[in-house]
Amino acid sequence: MHPATASQQISGPALFAEGISKAFVSGQQRTQVLDGLTLGIEAGELTLISGPSGCGKSTLLAILSGLQKVDSGRVHALGSELGQLDPRALERFRLQHTGFVFQGFNLFPALSAFEQVELPLNHMGLSRDEARRRARLSLEEVGLAHRMRLRPSELSGGEKQRVAIARALAKEPELLFADEPTSALDAANGQMIIDILHRIAHAHGTTVLCVSHDPRLVVHADRVLAMEDGRILSDRRTHAAVTQSKEIPS
Amino acid sequence: MVALARKTLIYEWRRFLPAMLAVGFAGLLQLLQIALVLGIFGSTSLYITGSSADVWVGYPGTQSVGSGRTISADVESRVLMDPAVQRVEPYIWVDGDWRGVGETGGVSVFVSGIDPGANGLMFSKALPPSLRARLVEPDAVVVDRSALDQLGVDIGQTATINGHPVRVVGISSGLRALGGVNVLCSLDTARRLNDDPADNGPTYLVAKLRDPSKAGAVAARLRGATAFGPYTTWSADDFARLSVLYWLFDTGAGAGVLFLAGIVFLVGAAITSQTLIAAVNGSVREYATLNALGVGVAALRRVVLEQAFWVGALGLLGASVLGLLLLMLARSQDVPVVLNVPAALACIVLVMGLAAVSGLAAMRSLRRADPATLLR
Image 1 (cartoon, helix red, strand yellow):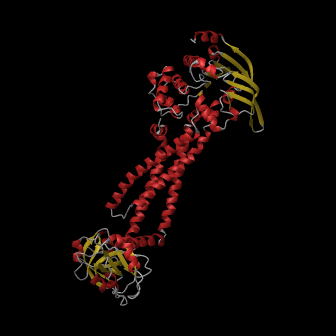
Image 2 (cartoon, rainbow over the protein chains, first blue to last red):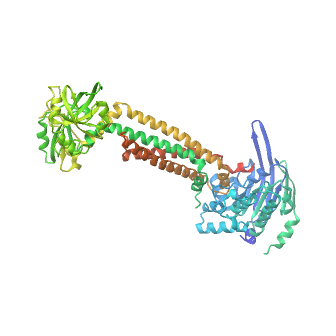
Image 3 (cartoon, rainbow over the protein chains, first blue to last red):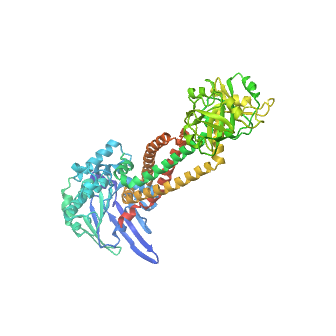
């Protein structure tokens, strides 16, 4: 998708959370994880939510991606209010619009890299040829063109995470969520992963929302939200974002 | 479409092996059990299935071949009057007490008096023509190979039945009986061996039709006349079934078969479902990721069910190969085993049903594939 068309389709932020609250109850203990949080995430950039573990950033990601319901407040994604959708409709929304990258790579041991990427595409109603074309393109984009016949056991950790990214990317989602995508990787591989996520946001106009406590990522994000105790402490745009976005041809 | 179920099954075959073995052995146990029961109890209808008669005439209320009573010999002319009937011959059943030359004590024998002519209907499929011809000799008998030790005789030796001397002129195979020993002789010899002066007619009349497919209709047509004394008729198939069912349920073996089938099903399903559940749990994060990407729970359930199907199919294949080998071994050792299409189908239904139930049980663990759990 072209950056220009993406921003034209959506007026305002691609993702908008309005006064969202979420609490977890375990036994007698009630923990308020998010309390009246309001937040907008723009399309075409890599937004990083950073903070110590337990600050509520993963819960925020789960809510913004429609994997979890809010106690109160509203989440608008691409013009839909996620709270209004039943579980089937939410599945359909995720199928059409979202990609996920998790900390664990969660690849099927029996499938080759190519099949891992092709599998979700089969369920999108694409023709076989189109699914295979997209799978090949995505794997090429993450630099795995020569490794696509290998199974997870034959790939390194960084390569596995790139397969997971290709699996999300091949769906051509408007929204891409990444949860601690680099925490299981060494510095070089972590660097490569964040570069790929950054490139996806800029080249495809995708809204990339990444949650991480990895301080190395901060300099690569377009926007960094620092979270603590369920609140956003700071919201700043980094220098990298300015220079990078200028390089993108219109 | 990426064949996730099959590829996982092949790649992680060790994980699925216990399920396939459980399904396979459940199928094998069931198969052999049915084959043995059919073989053992099938021998109670050997008199019918080993003969080429299409219609049987006997005393009303007869529950199995071995429990017949004499009917009037005049019934033969009534049966012959029917234009569909080609040939009728009497069949005499005598319960006998065998005393052999060896130290065997008394042995209970079932004497079958048959027409020894070349066109004789009785045992035409079980008795070779040369052996049949030897029965023409007075007091000649043929016994089954498997009963020689039990009877304490060998070919050419003499013994007595109900105090009358008989001589073993031949040894046949495949005439094993249940609860006694089959002894074949001519009608004349059988009449001499019968102690009971009240029995003066044949136990059965058996008829061959011009068109065997009309057996049911002809049997129905011949029934009901009373002018010749009490008698009734059955088609050969009906009478064979009657005999087998009588033995199955009179001896409690039928209930035993059903009981064991239930146990086999339960044990097989328990092991198979546990294995499939473990397989689902092992991949639960991958399934959750697919669900996060929007692949519906219904599609994931299909993957689990497909795996259950393949486990069932492969288990069945193994059971079939091993089962056939064991059945052949049993045949070679004179163990009575019989497998027919309905029995084989019953095994297939049981095994695939077992796999399906296990798959449904395993499908429940997909509930744990909640993508939100991946974000903790």
